[in-house]
Amino acid sequence: MTRFAAGFVLALVLALAGRGAQAGAPAQGETQVPAHAEPLSNPALAGPLLGTPPASLAPLVKWVAPAVVGIAVTEAPSGASMPAPVLKPSTKSSRAPQPPIGQAAGSGFIIRADGMIVTNDHVVAGAAQIIVTLNDGTRYPAKLAGADDLTDIAIIKISSSSPLTPARWGDSSKVQVGDWVLAAGNPFALGNSFTLGIVSAEGRDIDDGPFTHFFQLDAPINPGNSGGPSFNMQGQVIGINAAIVSPSGGSVGVGFAIPSNSAATVVDELIAHGAIARGWLGVGVGDPPAGNGGPGNGAVITGLEPGGPADRAGLTVGETVLTVNGIVVSGADGLTRAIAGLQPGVKVSLGVSENAHIFHIPVIVGRRPAQLGE
Image (tube, rainbow, N blue to C red; front, side, top):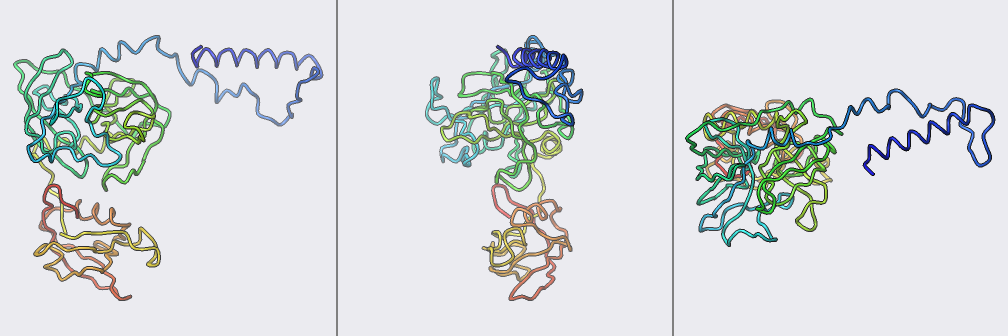
């Protein structure tokens, strides 16, 4: 029995029980409902809010499928490709059909008819060769066109003799917990597939970089789905599948997607410039210990890049950065966000604490090298 059928039967049973109660006193074994209790048929919770469930999602899948691609990556000889963090799918299949040694699989989606494709940075980072497979099975070599490791977004480019079908961005600010979501991708290198679920939560901080608070999804997301799109019921991309929580490496119903509004601006800049110019101090940072006001109260400098902006400005290991241009810093990620959001070359005033004294130190922000910390 489907959940909708079960709900209908339950509502019918409750309605019949209510009709019997109106005839007089409760029958033997029944419980008297207090007069002040909310009626079980509360209009605010009635079925019409759900709308009419579709008999099939096939029309939606047919509409969005041409934009979804599979990605096969041959790793660079150094083996530097795809150093998957704990929460991210490794994108390497441990089940048949398994890619050859030195290869890995991921997903992506076409964002422009000229062959621009969005995926995760951790899918293509360090790749020696990238092969894209379209939904119709056509294969193309691809080149990396831009990447941003802090947001885990990359752009790859293929050349097709005919225009391709791009996906459309949706507005992630309108997504609500409980909304249906259709996740697409290339799990375990099996080929493109689709799974249905809901948005379980929003604004999740999964300790996976300073910039993106993720949607949590219960639509099954597995290794190989990284970089694939999650669609709303209008066929618009509202998230980029990026990570899972799993003790086994497979889906347990806890996946995460980068919201489309965060991703779209990064994608536009990567297409235009190939990289994002982010500010950089040249420091290693950590959260303060509990005895120093607790985590989140500033960021402690744990290391210095010799000759970097902070080193040239005279900052030292052990100092705590409390403010950036007068704005309070909320932990190590807060400092990274504040500095990375600045254009290289601007002068910034850092409020720095040392031995209970606060100093304001001017620093010329540098340009953040790829694959480096703050």
